[in-house]
Image (cartoon, rainbow, N blue to C red; front, side, top):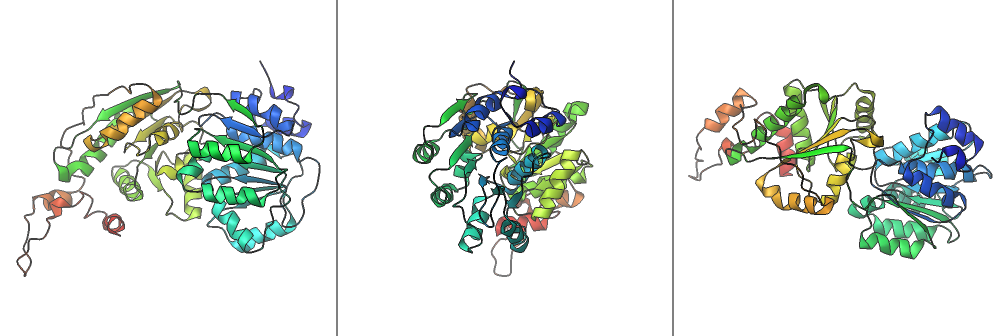
Length: 433
């Protein structure tokens, strides 16, 4: 079996790896590191949770061991689709550069330009950035990419989903054509393939798993749910979620609950809190400091349930997540793979459970088609049953008859509003906006 000591990495890097508790590289690491160290372009295709980050951080640190950074001209560039993923990559560099004298800067939104400018002015070996914030610095004349020797594009398929491909192409053109490019993606959409054909030169292609496959370590299931009444769907669906969590008992040590809409993230988190479940929301509208605090609490175990939008679906390395609950069937089949990839990582077992409403059945069929398997249907005591109202005021509201305005036109009854309309007016206002 191959070990990190067989990969010609710098001795200081190997020492940091050993202290981090690693001995044997994952397949993507074993495949990508050797050609990267030879200076070749690399195209890595692997599902989430396979150790892609170390596949580029370890050879980069070794290759950058010689040389010195110049002001406003980083020697390497790592592009990430989200702030959280960029911050995680920065943490990896901190771990593996423990004995190396390399400097880094993190350019993400929600952080002061002034503080970032100071770091860039001093000169950095490694620049980790989201595309938008990077281009902001370039346009302000604070950053030059003409000194980039190594460029990494991480989670390229997510970049595509988020509309970043034009920015990526522009950034590529701002870097020297002699640069080395390391390009990683979980799937290879036609647009991604076009980019790699354009900007990578005879890359070493490493594909360790079929694109869009789910890990064998994850036990998957789905509950087919139909509300007793349309106006009770939200309340009954949240009750079903709590019932699914309760049925897992002590096996569910912690979990990420995924919703499609930011408004639902807030509603579900508040509902869980109301019923004594330790939950907190995370989505793109939260301040960066709050998002970081919430993720840190979840990682440390002080927070049991993380209710998330897809901002947390890709790339985030949260070890030992026992369960993933898809409160909503994702609109894009690929997102299902990335969502459930938050559990069952590094060979450990995990559980992924999903709620499917009648309106979601088309998207659910697309998921089964993508993963090429039938996801087991699970009967649950709460599915299809009327849930108890979450508050007394909601119960009364649903029985309240419609009133007529002075103009004689019938107003919508509160029964036509979501069940959380009274308890969560802010969430409803967000939906209406």
